[in-house]
Image (cartoon, rainbow, N blue to C red; front, side, top):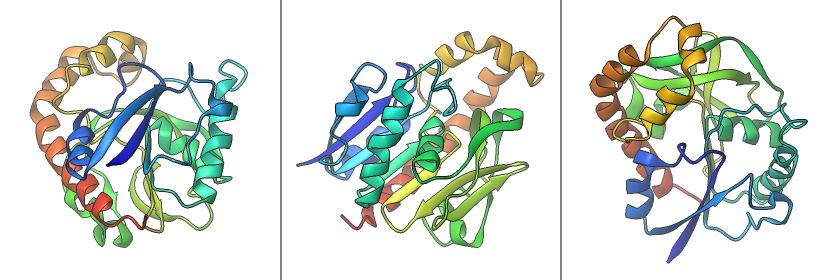
Length: 232
């Protein structure tokens, strides 16, 4: 049986809708709270799949969250070994940092549902399932695409996804959040950010009800196809 290790940074940002395709691909899922696990000693090489989830902190917040530096270092070792790795939101930013790319605050927050624009590379791979689908965005940071990686999707003004070979996929957006009750925690915990973008919890809840389920269907198809193409 294959093993997938999920690194979480807050309890309400788990793999949600991605659990189904990961389990369907034959993985048993373990979960670790990265900020409580002693990241420096964490074994990120042996799991067959590593999934790095989101969180409200930024990669540059190492003065507030010193364990972020350790997490970037263990990610660097896994990526150097080309072991299958999936990053979501903060996870994608940590991967970018581990590959030597700049991660920084973006020009504006993106919170709400909107489609991404796929590059030719994005249309040719698993992200093709997302074409024209409204996806959840919930972030204020951005990254440069690392050297050797391929840009797969964008919004204005953000890079939204990149890959490197068959074994690395980094996603800024949340195609996993469409049928999960933990979305209510997002609404409750991020009121100031929601107001900053001119939205309300009720508006986001209504959008989630409308766009979330088809986004999860597309996200599951994307992850299933990516997993099927892993190089081991």
